[in-house]
Length: 283
Image (tube, rainbow, N blue to C red; front, side, top):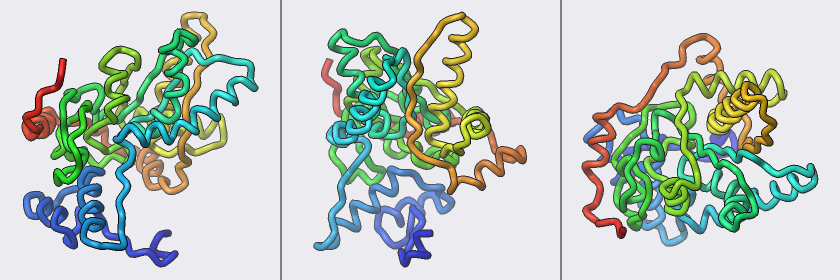
């Protein structure tokens, strides 16, 4: 579609940037990652006077900017006359879920809301559930500032799962701290688990969700079933942040039984964490 409108599309890692060339020299069959793509984009911006790059998703100001989502959601909840018991969203770098949940988190911290916050991530890139809280680069090529966050290491390349928007090695500092301090939970789901939820949602709600929000749908369905079995009434709020009209190949693979059940490899995580900068985290 982008090429139809006249854009030139270069798959990352590409041989047209220094960062991309370095990755391809070491890993010719690299499936890429958001961290690698960021390095390439920063390099292109730095080399062209008419180009700027705005780093997003993993920086706190981006999450705060995105809170327009959560502010609108609060008004919708007020119109419905309800308060959420559970607030769920998918997480890659954090801007989507942070923007959705932070206005509600402000109420929780102030003692005005008793709700459980659940960040849903892919098992192939389990940053919050299996990563380490440390200073790390936001990109693979080490061009960005160091950020204190949960990370799998900036050299970690996740398996090529269909939820491409969640294939990122770290999470925003503020969101990481909320998880670290127990104000937010994190859960990891595999591909087949989330596509099962996506199909169920499509058949009951008429909307085919993108693989990314299907993680949140998986968590929402699980929580609804738990509440039903316990005989409890729960108001479950989740963010449907994208449709799956461009993900039909992924759904075709799932429905045909061709979708691999990919998780991370412990060796890859150990290798990624071995490249963390030696910067101590304050107590």
